[in-house]
Length: 432
Image 1 (cartoon, one colour):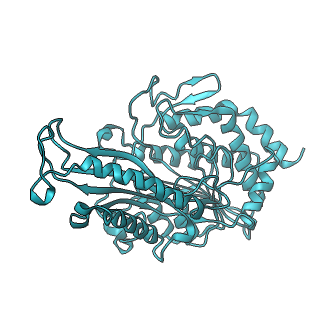
Image 2 (cartoon, rainbow, N blue to C red):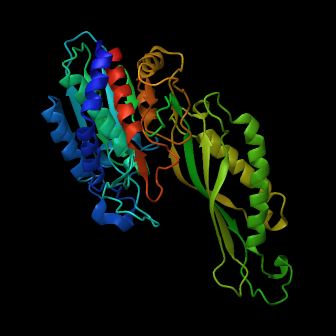
Image 3 (cartoon, rainbow, N blue to C red):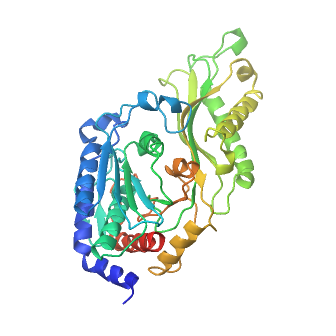
Protein backbone atom coordinates (compact mmCIF):
# COMPACT_ATOMS: atom_id res chain seq x y z
CA UNK A 1 0.00 0.00 0.00
CA UNK A 2 1.46 3.41 -0.99
CA UNK A 3 1.45 6.30 1.46
CA UNK A 4 -1.54 8.00 -0.18
CA UNK A 5 -3.67 4.87 0.12
CA UNK A 6 -2.45 4.39 3.68
CA UNK A 7 -3.43 7.92 4.73
CA UNK A 8 -6.73 7.76 2.85
CA UNK A 9 -7.68 4.53 4.61
CA UNK A 10 -6.69 6.01 8.00
CA UNK A 11 -8.92 9.04 7.39
CA UNK A 12 -11.85 6.73 6.62
CA UNK A 13 -11.18 4.70 9.78
CA UNK A 14 -11.20 7.89 11.89
CA UNK A 15 -14.28 9.47 10.32
CA UNK A 16 -16.19 9.64 13.61
CA UNK A 17 -13.43 11.61 15.37
CA UNK A 18 -13.06 13.95 12.40
CA UNK A 19 -16.77 14.73 12.47
CA UNK A 20 -16.71 15.23 16.26
CA UNK A 21 -13.90 17.77 15.84
CA UNK A 22 -16.01 19.71 13.34
CA UNK A 23 -19.04 19.54 15.61
CA UNK A 24 -17.07 21.03 18.47
CA UNK A 25 -15.86 23.91 16.29
CA UNK A 26 -19.39 24.77 15.14
CA UNK A 27 -20.64 24.63 18.73
CA UNK A 28 -18.27 27.48 19.69
CA UNK A 29 -20.06 30.67 18.57
CA UNK A 30 -17.66 33.13 16.95
CA UNK A 31 -19.74 35.82 15.26
CA UNK A 32 -17.67 38.77 14.11
CA UNK A 33 -18.41 41.63 16.55
CA UNK A 34 -18.97 43.95 13.57
CA UNK A 35 -22.46 42.36 13.62
CA UNK A 36 -23.28 44.29 16.78
CA UNK A 37 -26.62 42.59 17.49
CA UNK A 38 -24.79 39.42 18.50
CA UNK A 39 -22.26 40.59 21.11
CA UNK A 40 -22.89 37.57 23.33
CA UNK A 41 -21.72 35.26 20.52
CA UNK A 42 -18.51 37.07 19.58
CA UNK A 43 -16.09 34.54 21.00
CA UNK A 44 -13.42 34.17 18.32
CA UNK A 45 -10.98 33.83 21.22
CA UNK A 46 -12.64 30.59 22.39
CA UNK A 47 -12.25 29.08 18.91
CA UNK A 48 -8.60 30.09 18.71
CA UNK A 49 -7.81 28.66 22.14
CA UNK A 50 -9.51 25.38 21.25
CA UNK A 51 -7.51 25.17 18.02
CA UNK A 52 -4.29 26.03 19.83
CA UNK A 53 -4.82 23.22 22.33
CA UNK A 54 -5.69 20.75 19.56
CA UNK A 55 -2.59 21.65 17.53
CA UNK A 56 -0.30 21.43 20.54
CA UNK A 57 -1.52 17.88 21.15
CA UNK A 58 -0.41 17.01 17.59
CA UNK A 59 3.10 18.32 18.23
CA UNK A 60 2.80 21.82 16.75
CA UNK A 61 4.50 24.78 18.34
CA UNK A 62 1.77 27.40 18.77
CA UNK A 63 1.64 31.18 19.18
CA UNK A 64 -1.35 33.39 19.93
CA UNK A 65 -1.23 37.19 19.80
CA UNK A 66 -3.53 40.17 19.42
CA UNK A 67 -3.29 43.01 16.94
CA UNK A 68 -4.71 46.54 17.02
CA UNK A 69 -5.58 49.31 14.62
CA UNK A 70 -2.91 51.48 16.19
CA UNK A 71 -0.28 48.79 15.64
CA UNK A 72 -1.21 48.59 11.96
CA UNK A 73 -1.59 52.33 11.31
CA UNK A 74 1.21 52.22 8.71
CA UNK A 75 -1.24 50.34 6.50
CA UNK A 76 -3.95 52.99 6.51
CA UNK A 77 -5.24 53.24 2.96
CA UNK A 78 -4.61 49.56 2.25
CA UNK A 79 -7.29 46.84 2.13
CA UNK A 80 -7.94 45.21 5.48
CA UNK A 81 -7.19 48.29 7.60
CA UNK A 82 -9.93 49.96 9.64
CA UNK A 83 -8.75 52.56 12.12
CA UNK A 84 -11.76 52.17 14.43
CA UNK A 85 -11.83 48.37 14.44
CA UNK A 86 -11.64 46.88 17.99
CA UNK A 87 -9.37 43.81 18.12
CA UNK A 88 -9.07 43.10 21.84
CA UNK A 89 -9.71 39.45 22.80
CA UNK A 90 -9.59 38.49 19.11
CA UNK A 91 -6.26 36.63 18.85
CA UNK A 92 -4.40 35.47 15.76
CA UNK A 93 -3.06 31.91 15.78
CA UNK A 94 0.08 30.56 14.15
CA UNK A 95 1.29 26.97 14.56
CA UNK A 96 4.17 25.07 12.99
CA UNK A 97 4.99 21.37 12.76
CA UNK A 98 8.66 21.24 11.79
CA UNK A 99 9.88 19.09 8.95
CA UNK A 100 13.32 17.52 8.78
CA UNK A 101 14.68 20.43 6.72
CA UNK A 102 15.38 21.54 3.14
CA UNK A 103 11.75 21.09 2.09
CA UNK A 104 8.91 23.36 1.06
CA UNK A 105 6.59 24.70 3.75
CA UNK A 106 2.81 24.69 3.33
CA UNK A 107 0.54 27.14 5.12
CA UNK A 108 -3.04 26.06 5.82
CA UNK A 109 -5.09 29.11 6.72
CA UNK A 110 -8.64 30.23 7.43
CA UNK A 111 -10.78 32.58 9.50
CA UNK A 112 -12.28 31.82 12.89
CA UNK A 113 -15.14 34.33 12.66
CA UNK A 114 -18.58 33.74 11.16
CA UNK A 115 -21.40 36.05 10.07
CA UNK A 116 -24.47 36.80 12.15
CA UNK A 117 -27.15 34.16 12.59
CA UNK A 118 -30.02 36.04 10.94
CA UNK A 119 -33.61 34.87 10.69
CA UNK A 120 -35.26 31.76 9.29
CA UNK A 121 -33.41 29.02 11.17
CA UNK A 122 -35.28 25.81 11.93
CA UNK A 123 -32.34 24.32 13.84
CA UNK A 124 -30.04 25.53 16.63
CA UNK A 125 -27.42 27.57 14.72
CA UNK A 126 -24.75 26.42 17.18
CA UNK A 127 -26.07 22.93 17.79
CA UNK A 128 -24.05 21.21 15.05
CA UNK A 129 -26.87 18.72 14.60
CA UNK A 130 -26.41 15.91 12.10
CA UNK A 131 -29.28 14.79 9.90
CA UNK A 132 -28.48 12.09 7.40
CA UNK A 133 -25.18 13.09 5.82
CA UNK A 134 -25.42 16.81 6.62
CA UNK A 135 -24.18 18.82 9.60
CA UNK A 136 -26.01 22.07 10.37
CA UNK A 137 -24.81 25.27 12.01
CA UNK A 138 -23.61 28.80 11.45
CA UNK A 139 -20.12 28.50 9.97
CA UNK A 140 -20.49 24.85 8.94
CA UNK A 141 -19.56 25.89 5.40
CA UNK A 142 -17.94 29.27 6.00
CA UNK A 143 -15.62 28.17 7.32
CA UNK A 144 -15.48 25.87 10.31
CA UNK A 145 -15.59 22.98 7.83
CA UNK A 146 -12.45 24.17 6.08
CA UNK A 147 -10.58 24.80 9.33
CA UNK A 148 -11.51 21.37 10.68
CA UNK A 149 -10.51 19.72 7.38
CA UNK A 150 -7.05 21.30 7.27
CA UNK A 151 -6.27 20.35 10.87
CA UNK A 152 -7.59 16.82 10.42
CA UNK A 153 -5.48 16.51 7.25
CA UNK A 154 -2.36 17.53 9.17
CA UNK A 155 -3.34 15.07 11.91
CA UNK A 156 -3.65 12.23 9.39
CA UNK A 157 -0.17 12.87 7.98
CA UNK A 158 1.41 13.21 11.42
CA UNK A 159 -0.32 10.17 12.96
CA UNK A 160 0.80 8.03 10.01
CA UNK A 161 4.40 9.13 10.61
CA UNK A 162 4.90 10.42 7.08
CA UNK A 163 8.34 12.02 6.99
CA UNK A 164 8.26 15.53 5.61
CA UNK A 165 11.17 17.80 4.81
CA UNK A 166 9.01 20.94 4.77
CA UNK A 167 7.02 22.46 7.63
CA UNK A 168 3.25 22.24 8.03
CA UNK A 169 2.04 25.69 9.08
CA UNK A 170 -1.41 26.60 10.35
CA UNK A 171 -2.82 30.12 10.68
CA UNK A 172 -6.33 31.12 11.73
CA UNK A 173 -7.42 34.73 11.98
CA UNK A 174 -10.30 36.85 13.27
CA UNK A 175 -12.15 39.55 11.35
CA UNK A 176 -12.28 38.14 7.81
CA UNK A 177 -16.04 38.53 7.57
CA UNK A 178 -15.86 42.30 8.06
CA UNK A 179 -12.60 43.46 6.56
CA UNK A 180 -9.48 41.41 7.23
CA UNK A 181 -7.44 42.98 10.05
CA UNK A 182 -6.31 39.53 11.17
CA UNK A 183 -4.72 38.56 7.86
CA UNK A 184 -3.29 42.05 7.43
CA UNK A 185 -1.39 41.64 10.69
CA UNK A 186 -0.30 38.05 10.05
CA UNK A 187 1.26 38.52 6.63
CA UNK A 188 3.40 41.40 7.88
CA UNK A 189 4.94 39.30 10.67
CA UNK A 190 7.58 38.04 8.25
CA UNK A 191 6.66 34.34 8.59
CA UNK A 192 7.88 32.61 5.43
CA UNK A 193 5.75 30.08 3.57
CA UNK A 194 6.40 28.43 0.21
CA UNK A 195 2.69 28.03 -0.54
CA UNK A 196 -0.68 28.60 1.10
CA UNK A 197 -4.15 27.08 0.94
CA UNK A 198 -7.10 29.10 2.19
CA UNK A 199 -9.69 26.49 3.08
CA UNK A 200 -12.64 28.64 2.05
CA UNK A 201 -15.67 26.72 0.73
CA UNK A 202 -15.14 26.00 -2.96
CA UNK A 203 -17.13 22.77 -3.39
CA UNK A 204 -13.76 20.98 -3.70
CA UNK A 205 -12.81 23.11 -6.70
CA UNK A 206 -9.29 24.51 -6.81
CA UNK A 207 -9.52 28.30 -6.82
CA UNK A 208 -6.29 30.12 -7.78
CA UNK A 209 -7.96 33.53 -7.98
CA UNK A 210 -10.63 35.57 -6.24
CA UNK A 211 -12.41 38.73 -7.25
CA UNK A 212 -12.24 42.03 -5.43
CA UNK A 213 -15.40 43.42 -3.86
CA UNK A 214 -16.63 47.00 -3.56
CA UNK A 215 -19.60 47.90 -1.38
CA UNK A 216 -21.15 51.33 -1.70
CA UNK A 217 -24.21 53.54 -1.64
CA UNK A 218 -25.39 55.84 -4.40
CA UNK A 219 -27.05 58.77 -2.60
CA UNK A 220 -29.66 60.50 -4.81
CA UNK A 221 -31.07 63.85 -3.66
CA UNK A 222 -34.70 64.83 -4.20
CA UNK A 223 -36.98 67.32 -2.54
CA UNK A 224 -39.82 66.20 -0.29
CA UNK A 225 -43.33 67.57 -0.78
CA UNK A 226 -46.98 66.71 -0.22
CA UNK A 227 -47.69 63.77 -2.52
CA UNK A 228 -51.40 64.59 -2.89
CA UNK A 229 -50.92 68.20 -3.95
CA UNK A 230 -50.13 69.64 -7.37
CA UNK A 231 -46.50 70.69 -7.39
CA UNK A 232 -44.82 73.55 -9.19
CA UNK A 233 -41.53 73.08 -11.07
CA UNK A 234 -38.61 72.45 -8.76
CA UNK A 235 -37.01 75.75 -9.79
CA UNK A 236 -40.09 77.43 -8.30
CA UNK A 237 -39.81 75.48 -5.06
CA UNK A 238 -41.74 72.37 -6.07
CA UNK A 239 -40.93 68.87 -4.92
CA UNK A 240 -38.71 66.39 -6.77
CA UNK A 241 -39.64 62.72 -6.42
CA UNK A 242 -36.47 60.80 -5.53
CA UNK A 243 -38.25 57.53 -6.36
CA UNK A 244 -38.37 58.50 -10.04
CA UNK A 245 -34.69 59.39 -9.93
CA UNK A 246 -34.03 56.03 -8.28
CA UNK A 247 -35.82 54.34 -11.19
CA UNK A 248 -33.64 56.28 -13.61
CA UNK A 249 -30.51 54.88 -11.98
CA UNK A 250 -31.83 51.34 -11.77
CA UNK A 251 -32.54 51.39 -15.51
CA UNK A 252 -29.11 52.80 -16.30
CA UNK A 253 -27.40 50.22 -14.09
CA UNK A 254 -28.80 47.53 -16.39
CA UNK A 255 -27.13 49.23 -19.37
CA UNK A 256 -23.92 49.68 -17.39
CA UNK A 257 -23.85 45.96 -16.58
CA UNK A 258 -24.43 45.15 -20.22
CA UNK A 259 -21.17 46.92 -21.07
CA UNK A 260 -19.30 45.24 -18.22
CA UNK A 261 -20.60 41.82 -19.34
CA UNK A 262 -18.16 41.82 -22.27
CA UNK A 263 -15.29 43.69 -20.60
CA UNK A 264 -14.97 42.54 -16.98
CA UNK A 265 -14.40 38.84 -17.65
CA UNK A 266 -11.81 36.27 -16.60
CA UNK A 267 -11.10 32.80 -18.06
CA UNK A 268 -11.51 31.18 -14.64
CA UNK A 269 -14.90 32.80 -14.02
CA UNK A 270 -18.21 31.81 -15.61
CA UNK A 271 -19.81 35.16 -14.84
CA UNK A 272 -18.57 38.72 -15.47
CA UNK A 273 -18.10 41.39 -12.84
CA UNK A 274 -21.28 43.40 -12.35
CA UNK A 275 -22.64 46.31 -10.33
CA UNK A 276 -25.34 44.45 -8.43
CA UNK A 277 -28.10 46.20 -6.49
CA UNK A 278 -28.39 44.72 -3.01
CA UNK A 279 -30.96 47.14 -1.62
CA UNK A 280 -32.84 50.40 -2.20
CA UNK A 281 -34.41 52.91 0.15
CA UNK A 282 -36.53 56.01 -0.40
CA UNK A 283 -39.21 57.94 1.44
CA UNK A 284 -40.29 58.42 5.02
CA UNK A 285 -44.11 58.30 5.03
CA UNK A 286 -46.96 57.69 2.56
CA UNK A 287 -48.14 61.29 2.09
CA UNK A 288 -44.79 62.73 0.97
CA UNK A 289 -42.61 62.44 -2.08
CA UNK A 290 -39.25 60.94 -1.16
CA UNK A 291 -36.72 63.65 -0.39
CA UNK A 292 -33.79 61.33 -1.09
CA UNK A 293 -33.07 57.80 -2.22
CA UNK A 294 -30.18 55.42 -2.01
CA UNK A 295 -28.99 52.34 -3.82
CA UNK A 296 -26.82 49.87 -1.94
CA UNK A 297 -24.61 47.87 -4.28
CA UNK A 298 -21.93 45.23 -4.54
CA UNK A 299 -19.50 45.54 -7.45
CA UNK A 300 -16.75 43.06 -8.24
CA UNK A 301 -13.38 43.62 -9.88
CA UNK A 302 -10.47 41.56 -11.21
CA UNK A 303 -6.77 41.34 -10.26
CA UNK A 304 -5.71 43.39 -13.31
CA UNK A 305 -7.77 46.29 -11.93
CA UNK A 306 -5.77 46.63 -8.69
CA UNK A 307 -3.88 49.85 -8.01
CA UNK A 308 -0.44 50.07 -6.37
CA UNK A 309 -2.03 49.77 -2.91
CA UNK A 310 -3.97 46.64 -3.95
CA UNK A 311 -7.29 48.49 -4.06
CA UNK A 312 -10.01 48.88 -6.65
CA UNK A 313 -9.43 52.61 -7.18
CA UNK A 314 -9.86 52.39 -10.96
CA UNK A 315 -13.20 50.63 -10.63
CA UNK A 316 -14.35 53.16 -8.03
CA UNK A 317 -13.55 55.94 -10.49
CA UNK A 318 -15.45 54.12 -13.24
CA UNK A 319 -18.55 53.79 -11.05
CA UNK A 320 -18.33 57.41 -9.89
CA UNK A 321 -18.07 58.52 -13.53
CA UNK A 322 -21.16 56.46 -14.35
CA UNK A 323 -23.11 58.10 -11.52
CA UNK A 324 -22.05 61.54 -12.76
CA UNK A 325 -22.94 60.81 -16.40
CA UNK A 326 -26.44 59.67 -15.45
CA UNK A 327 -26.87 62.84 -13.39
CA UNK A 328 -25.93 64.90 -16.44
CA UNK A 329 -29.07 63.62 -18.20
CA UNK A 330 -31.47 65.15 -15.66
CA UNK A 331 -31.91 68.90 -15.08
CA UNK A 332 -32.42 68.53 -11.30
CA UNK A 333 -29.45 66.20 -10.85
CA UNK A 334 -27.19 68.46 -12.91
CA UNK A 335 -27.54 71.03 -10.11
CA UNK A 336 -28.03 68.64 -7.18
CA UNK A 337 -25.37 66.03 -7.64
CA UNK A 338 -25.70 62.43 -6.44
CA UNK A 339 -22.61 60.90 -4.89
CA UNK A 340 -21.16 57.52 -3.98
CA UNK A 341 -20.40 56.64 -0.37
CA UNK A 342 -17.87 53.80 -0.24
CA UNK A 343 -18.35 51.17 2.45
CA UNK A 344 -15.79 48.46 1.72
CA UNK A 345 -12.95 47.59 -0.66
CA UNK A 346 -11.85 43.96 -0.37
CA UNK A 347 -8.93 43.18 -2.66
CA UNK A 348 -8.34 40.31 -5.06
CA UNK A 349 -5.44 38.20 -6.29
CA UNK A 350 -4.40 35.43 -8.64
CA UNK A 351 -1.89 32.57 -8.57
CA UNK A 352 -0.95 31.23 -12.04
CA UNK A 353 -3.13 28.23 -12.82
CA UNK A 354 -0.25 26.67 -14.78
CA UNK A 355 2.30 27.20 -12.00
CA UNK A 356 3.95 24.50 -9.89
CA UNK A 357 1.84 25.10 -6.79
CA UNK A 358 -1.51 24.67 -8.55
CA UNK A 359 -0.23 21.72 -10.58
CA UNK A 360 0.94 19.98 -7.40
CA UNK A 361 -2.47 20.49 -5.81
CA UNK A 362 -4.17 19.04 -8.88
CA UNK A 363 -1.88 15.98 -8.92
CA UNK A 364 -2.62 15.15 -5.30
CA UNK A 365 -6.33 15.89 -5.55
CA UNK A 366 -6.73 13.61 -8.58
CA UNK A 367 -5.51 10.67 -6.50
CA UNK A 368 -8.65 11.15 -4.39
CA UNK A 369 -11.27 12.61 -6.72
CA UNK A 370 -11.36 12.89 -10.48
CA UNK A 371 -11.88 15.04 -12.39
CA UNK A 372 -10.71 18.12 -10.48
CA UNK A 373 -12.04 21.53 -11.48
CA UNK A 374 -9.94 24.70 -11.44
CA UNK A 375 -12.15 27.76 -11.10
CA UNK A 376 -11.97 31.30 -9.76
CA UNK A 377 -13.75 32.28 -6.56
CA UNK A 378 -16.54 34.74 -7.30
CA UNK A 379 -16.46 36.17 -3.78
CA UNK A 380 -13.59 37.71 -1.84
CA UNK A 381 -11.10 35.81 0.29
CA UNK A 382 -8.03 36.99 2.20
CA UNK A 383 -5.68 35.44 -0.38
CA UNK A 384 -4.64 38.83 -1.72
CA UNK A 385 -2.25 39.69 1.08
CA UNK A 386 -0.48 36.34 0.78
CA UNK A 387 -0.10 36.59 -2.99
CA UNK A 388 1.13 40.19 -2.73
CA UNK A 389 3.81 38.91 -0.33
CA UNK A 390 5.01 36.43 -2.96
CA UNK A 391 3.29 33.33 -1.54
CA UNK A 392 1.45 31.24 -4.17
CA UNK A 393 -2.02 30.82 -2.72
CA UNK A 394 -5.19 28.97 -3.65
CA UNK A 395 -8.70 28.70 -2.24
CA UNK A 396 -9.81 25.14 -1.61
CA UNK A 397 -12.25 23.67 0.84
CA UNK A 398 -15.45 21.71 1.47
CA UNK A 399 -18.95 23.10 1.08
CA UNK A 400 -20.81 25.12 -1.49
CA UNK A 401 -20.26 28.87 -1.18
CA UNK A 402 -23.89 29.28 -2.25
CA UNK A 403 -24.96 27.84 1.12
CA UNK A 404 -22.67 30.10 3.17
CA UNK A 405 -24.43 32.81 5.21
CA UNK A 406 -27.86 31.19 4.72
CA UNK A 407 -30.29 30.09 7.41
CA UNK A 408 -29.86 26.37 8.17
CA UNK A 409 -26.33 26.46 6.74
CA UNK A 410 -25.09 22.90 6.30
CA UNK A 411 -22.08 20.90 5.12
CA UNK A 412 -22.11 17.54 3.37
CA UNK A 413 -20.06 15.20 5.56
CA UNK A 414 -18.82 12.98 2.73
CA UNK A 415 -17.44 16.08 1.02
CA UNK A 416 -15.83 17.13 4.30
CA UNK A 417 -14.03 13.78 4.56
CA UNK A 418 -12.96 13.98 0.90
CA UNK A 419 -11.48 17.43 1.49
CA UNK A 420 -9.40 16.03 4.37
CA UNK A 421 -7.96 13.43 2.00
CA UNK A 422 -7.21 15.97 -0.72
CA UNK A 423 -5.50 18.33 1.70
CA UNK A 424 -3.47 15.49 3.18
CA UNK A 425 -2.33 14.53 -0.33
CA UNK A 426 -1.18 18.12 -0.93
CA UNK A 427 0.72 18.19 2.36
CA UNK A 428 2.57 15.03 1.36
CA UNK A 429 3.26 16.07 -2.23
CA UNK A 430 4.39 19.60 -1.39
CA UNK A 431 6.29 19.06 1.85
CA UNK A 432 8.04 15.71 1.27
